[in-house]
Image 1 (cartoon, rainbow, N blue to C red):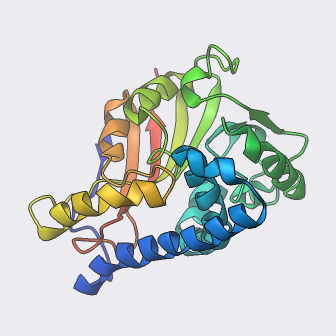
Image 2: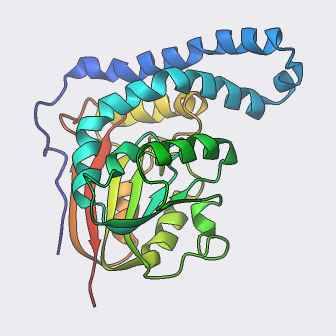
Length: 273
């Protein structure tokens, strides 16, 4: 049995002024181009200017060092109860980055977790990810797998129906071929296993101004936020990935027709045989 709230299932919805929020966030990111250039010049890293992708990586890293913790604090009220109450057994943590959410998996909050596989293809993140796992008291059960989610069966050694919990927190918006990856992750879940999700999604208000506004913002947004695409219908792809026994997805708190970067949050439980 599946259920999904419609566009009107929000509370304390924000007003039209919220349409300007993505412009403010983009301006923060663009501002960090200046200190990035200064940093590269002072450190004689001139070859970085010859590669747009390398420059973007350095630029985003400096920006995210400032903005990442603030983004986490904003999302925490929604993410904390999702991860603390539902993660159990053998967990697949997709795209954990540097591990900013690992403190939520502490055993005091999640005594039923037995193993966590952190799927992080960016090896530059592994040192910080390992440190955060140890700091959270998870050093003995957290294993980093340095491959993409699409390679979990071939390179990661993860077999079908061996995972109790899949966790995707603001990662499906930026990984390549997300629809394909979602379909490849679904078979890894055990029957009765849960997928915990907190992701950016395409607005449901396509007939309203915000639908066109979101598409326009998305021309610039991925360049400022490390490839993040805010127009992906991730919730629809999840629902189509396979058979679900129960779906509990809802919009982000207070989000509605004036939100350019809306979210879905909740759980999907795989159908038992």
